[in-house]
View 1 (cartoon, chains in turn yellow, orange):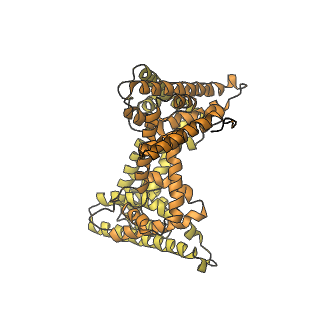
View 2: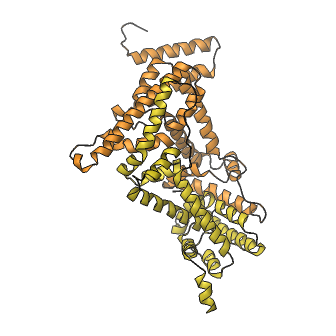
View 3: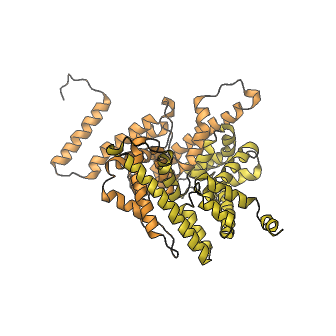
Length: 223
Length: 252
C-alpha cells in the first residue's frame, strides 16, 4: 500500500528522466533535444499557416542560428519557405527603405527565438524534476548505472545551483567525478592504442565513441 | 613589358599592382595596408565569382565563407600539428575546450580518423582539468575565451575592414551585385563600419536586389508546390531559395 502510494507520486517526467539516463548522454540534454524535435515536427506538420506562430516568427526574425540549422535539417522545403516568407518580405522592405535613406540602424528582432522558449521551458521542467528526485533510490540507481554518463558540465552546474541538501550535493559530485574519470580512462586507452607500438590492439566501440562523448559531456549535447 | 607579349586585362591589373607594391617597397613605404589591398582585394573578388548564383555558385555570404575556411584550416592544422604544443593545449584547459558553436566543427572533424587522436588528447586534458576543479561550493566554468572565438573575431574584423574599404570600387560593386550578397548579421556589422553615405546606399541597394531575387524564388517555390501548378518545373534557384532565406538571417 505504502509502495503503491510512493509510485503514484511519480509521473511521466520522472520515468522520462530515468529512461533518458540509459542513452549514454546527459539525460537533460536528451530530453531537451527530444522536445525541440517534437516542436519542429509538429510545427512543420500542422502549424506553418498558423497566424500566431507566423507573427511570433516575424517578430523574432525567424529562429536563432542553432535552431534554424535544426529546422533546415528536417528538409521540409515548402514548410520552411512558408514560415520564412513573411519575415523575409518584412526584412526586404526594411532594407529597401534603407537603400533610399541609408542613415540609422537596420531594425532588430523584437522577440526570442520560439524554439529557444520551448527548450527553456522543458529544460526548467526536467531540471526541477531531477532536483526533486535526487534522493530517490530508483533515480540514483539509474544515474549510477554503467550505461549512464552522468550530467554534462552546464547541466551539472545548474543542478548544483538549485539543490541545497548537503548529502545530495556530495552524492551528485561523487557520481560526476566517477563518471568523468571513467570517460577519461577510456579516452586515454583510445590515445594509447593510436601509438604505433600498440597498433595491434583493437579499439573497442566504447573507445571509438569516447571523443564524441567527451565533447558532448563538456559542452552539452550538440544537434 | 615587351609589346609583342599579349596579356589579358587581368594581367594588367596584377602587373600594375605588383609594380606599385615594388615602388612602395623601394621607397620603404611598406605598410600592411599596401599588401592587404592586393591580396585581400583579389581574394574577395574571386570569392564573389565563386559564389555568383548565375554561374552555379551557392550564393553564400563571402564573410561567412572566409570565416568557415579559416576555421576549417585552423582546426585541421592545429589538431595535427599543434597538438603537442603547450601553448595550444593550456588555453584549451582554461576555456574548457571549445564553445558549443565551435564544437560543431569538431563534430565534423571527428568523423575523420586522422583528427580523432588530436580531439581525444585535447579533451583528455579538459576532463582532467574539470575533475581537478570539481568543488561542492563553486561551479566549474571556463576562465578563458574559446580560442576559436578569438580567431573568428579577428578574421571577421579583417574581412569587414576589407569589404568596407572597397565598397566604393567599381569592379568590386559589380561583382558584389552578382554574388549572393552578405547575411544579415554581417550586413549589420558592415553597415555600422561604413561611414561613407554613398557606400552605405550601394550596400543597401545591392542587398535589396539580392533579397528581391530570393523572395521571388521563394514565392515561386511555394506556388509550384500547389497541386494546380504541379506541372511547372522548379528551377535550381527556386529549389534552393528556402535554404537561402534561412541562411540570410543566421549566416552560412
